[in-house]
Amino acid sequence: MPPQDTGLHRVSSYQHDDPTEGGDSTTTDDLRPSRHAPVGVDQIATIEPITLTSAMRRESFIVDFVHSKGPPQIVILIMLLALGFGSTIGVVPAIMSDRYARLEHGYTGNMHCGDYPLGEKPQECLDGSADAQNAVAMEQLISNSLTFFTSSLVGSLSDEYGRRPILLFGVMLSCLSPLFLLLLQLDDNMSPKWYYCAGATTGLVNWIAVALSSLSDVMPKKWRAPSFGLLIAGFSLGFAMAPVLALFMGHLGVSFFALTLVLTGFFVTLFFFPETLPPHEAARAMDLRESLVEGMSPMRKVFWNIQRPIWELSILNRNRLFRLLSMLAFFSGLVSAGDRTLLIYYIEERLGFNDRDVALMFFIMGMLGIFVQGFVLKILNEAIGERMVVTVCFCLGSLHNLLYGLASAKATIFIAVAISAFGAMAFPTISAIKSNNVEGSEQGRIQGALYSLSALASAMGPMVLRFVYHYTKDGAFLGPGSMFVVASMLYLVAVFCAYCLPDEADSRKRGSHNTDPLNSFPDDSRTTPLV
Image 1 (cartoon, one colour):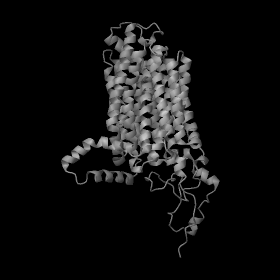
Image 2 (spheres, helix red, strand yellow):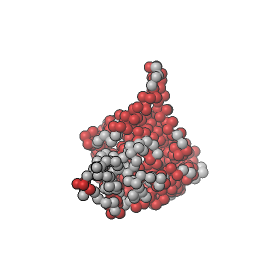
Image 3 (cartoon, helix red, strand yellow):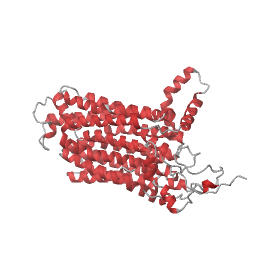
Image 4 (cartoon, one colour):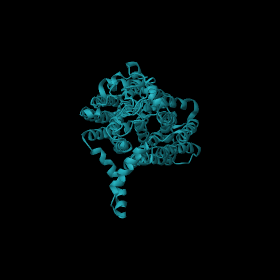
């Protein structure tokens, strides 16, 4: 008579979800026999009884994250790219404004346009700044339009063929912008349009959506929001430290440094990033695609593949939750893109921000971002749930945009930036909600589809805010800052949408229906320690 299964015992901390729910749980050190497998006497001696201590130990989020294949490499990649792009974010407006002033408006002064004190800039420099703002708005329009048409398809392809090759291609495209920024400073007659064209090509592949899908492949559902938050914390660390480099290295030196970091990120992806997509999930996704074209004539298959990007977006209309998430993605993308694109130009032109001020602003944003994404997000997520976290974040988004618009001193901008670090919790939380509500074979598709919609909003955002600025810059309404006040009102619409999210948005409430005894202790994630 074979020995009977003894019941509960220690399992790997990587396996928390029902394997039938998308297969997104991965186990590498499972000490538990199968649920119906016999257990021998020699095995019983090695079984650790489930106690509160052992349960809390294996429920460690940080330990799971560090020991999973893929997440540590993603954070390293994020930090390298954030350091690279962040080190130039404060110098690009100055470089481009000066170049446009010289090439398009006849400026011949020996002083760089960015070195003039507030109120003393020549008209040629102000005109060059306006040209640079229009150029970056057009770059965002093209880039996000490309993302709108390709992101859902790229995400779906990553579900079939793996995350690694698509992530590698996306990072390679990201190397073009720092390359052309460096070349621009080596050639005094080179048009800045080359730089903006290079930036627009990055919209072909949204590598961030692929990185989020990779995290979803290996992390349990209840830890996806803090996992995505840790990814954003990597961004924050990079952006906190990077702008300081421009103070010591100069514009040319920091441009070369940025290119070196981004190329390093490319080689880290090439040589160290593992494939995270489980083979059975890739097979499921491929079977689904083949079933859709089964029986079609060759010509009809060609037309179907042309229409496929639109079909991939249909997942956003699957249910009420996805429709509300789509509205959140649209309104948040509309405002955040405008802030990200135009704020630096605005504060440099209107409030006299220099490289030191920009460095301090990003240091505040970055250090608070690390604290918020690495610690506060998990605590809030467990205390009030994802739905209320998103609602609070959009309230804070409305507040910090209002402060941008009403600011008359640098201190107000610094306060607004500090608040924006807390509002940034919305991004990883929304990403976790959509990841938790699809099968494992649809992770790339849902991330890509929502990024497509967000890209459409991001393409419109800078243009909408520039339109408001054009009609208010001379004092109408609330003056030049009116565009940020309008952005604050748009965030209020997102607050209403977030509050209307159904119960499925909260992983705590979804988890309360778990009847699997092996996964139900401790089922309540509120008992989960951070480390």
